[in-house]
Image (spheres, rainbow, N blue to C red):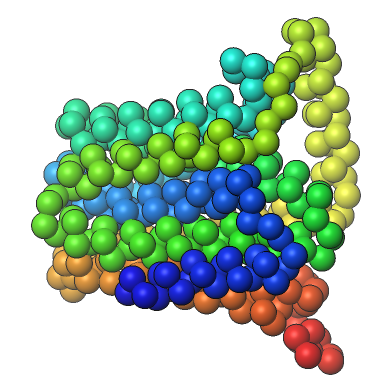
Length: 316
């Protein structure tokens, strides 16, 4: 397994060289942020077993709680707007990334040491979600700025690079999360996970940042201008239709909680086996990134969404 992970990391660096990138300090820091997000999957199974076994929640209660804690992701654009307009300690990005990483680490430690009720669990997990959503928004902004400096054809490749970093982190944590949960328990896994958000704080100091900010009147004017631009953007078909598609996709109900209870209560899968399943899923995700970059990078997106082939094949 270690050899497979090493080869994946080497392959990412080789692909970066092929695409004409220099794996400089900033790009490595961006990769570290996304790697840390993937590695947070170390606690995914621990959270599910903690809610089911220690807090005694039912499938519907678990689904409701997890729905609430995803709310910070619904206002993700707000974090970028606030960070661009209200710098902390003179910086627009570094400071927010450090604060979000400290918030995430504190929330995981709270889960490990002080959470004993569903309400406390909801607040703590929501804080971890807020921390990841905020740091993800800042990292996405750095990727966008980086893409503007690259050739237009390489924008998708840069996004693939970030997803590869997430997949590597997920692969490293998938099986390990199940093994640690099996042997050490959920609270110990939470304590170990508390160290992972600090990767974002380390990476923050290597990401390009522009200090400065606006006075309150200019700030309000800037927010109004951004609101008008957002309104105008949603009048464009090429933006509105993908937004509607993403909304419908995310609004589609899932059976994740019920399926977890089924696999553990009815099929009696243990954490280590579920960790193996997550490992296979993560490897499949990394394979999807490779297939896109290798064969599908030049294909029209409409063909992906509608299952419509192109002639001649776009990978030819």
